[in-house]
Length: 150
Image (cartoon, rainbow, N blue to C red; front, side):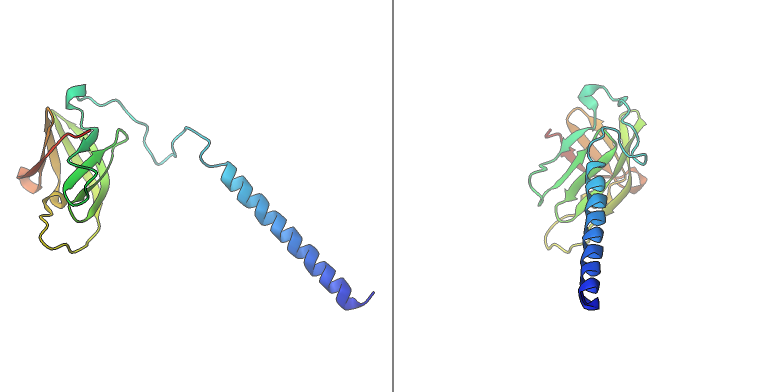
């Protein structure tokens, strides 16, 4: 047997071992995600909203199926997503008591869309009255309203 034959066999054995290790690592990673109902440590546990059910901010506000009009979706875990009619919005919301919510850490894309009033991107707080969310900007100035759609 020549030295080159031994070197090729050793190389193939090394490659096969490397493939096996990578496969094992990927399999372990795939099976360790998505099987737990426990949220990651960075996600706070959902707490009951102090809002009466009829005033709960959780749900869809505005037409969330039409990205060309302002809308927000508020989740029970305190996260939000939406659009100002042009740009996508993501962030967090928090109960301030008295029918008021505050928006925090809201980020937005920065696309230029002609003829679109992007008032919702200036949100700071909101009040809920029945099926109407009144959105406030800085200094509690009313910048618009959204109707509950879901």
